[in-house]
Amino acid sequence: MRPGRLRPPALMRVSTLEEAITTSHATGKIAYRGKGNIYVNITNRCSSACEYCLRDFTDEAYGEPLKLDHEPPVEEIEQAIELEFLDGPGDEVAFCGFGEPTIRLDAVLAVTDWLRLRRIPSRLVTNGHGRLLNPDVDVAATLAAAGLDAVTISLNAADPQTYDLICRPIFSKTHRAVIRFAEECVGHGLNTTLTAVDYPGADIEGCRAIAKAVGAAFRLRGLVSREDRESATKKEAE
Ligand code: SF4
Image (cartoon, rainbow, N blue to C red):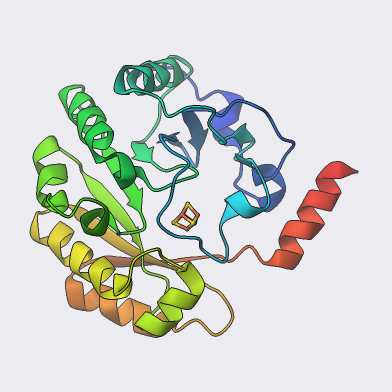
């Protein structure tokens, strides 16, 4: 699955805003590359409406169109991953697109198992709503059983009120559920990282303390401000 070739030019792209925002395409990519990884875009549905979401001002990330015209079945996802590996190696396959992957938990589990059988490292990038979206499933346990290696969970706020303002979830009491999901992921041995976007007034140290308390790593993500978005979009149009 991992041809020993030099990385193609696409892998050398830097994730600048200008590169993340380009012109629109009609059909979205299921598998695409960024930061040395292969990302998998399996749905455009989401249980949040984050203030900073890329979907609000572009159809693309890393120069790839991510607005899907259909939700791909598992076989199509696996085929898209295989095609990406034909173009060169990737450090891991991460479920990360224009939507929340655990809305399609069955597909995530099936593809994760498929990756495990091929010894390809896998990671889920999630808003942490897995248990709310799949209330009858122990999501962290099933992900671990399928062979998922790592999970990156957007925390984004140190308190529930700020979380609701920034992430605008469709559920109530979501902040607590996100932290509980992180605890469960840690408990099931998943390499767990909580992240927060560096928006003005963000309680980064509070988020870092929550990550430490649940036994997860913490990563700060840069904010793409509305001004940056408009400027980059304008630049692209010139
Ligand atoms: S969780 Fe991700 S996809 Fe969903 S609204 Fe927030 S940034 Fe966008």
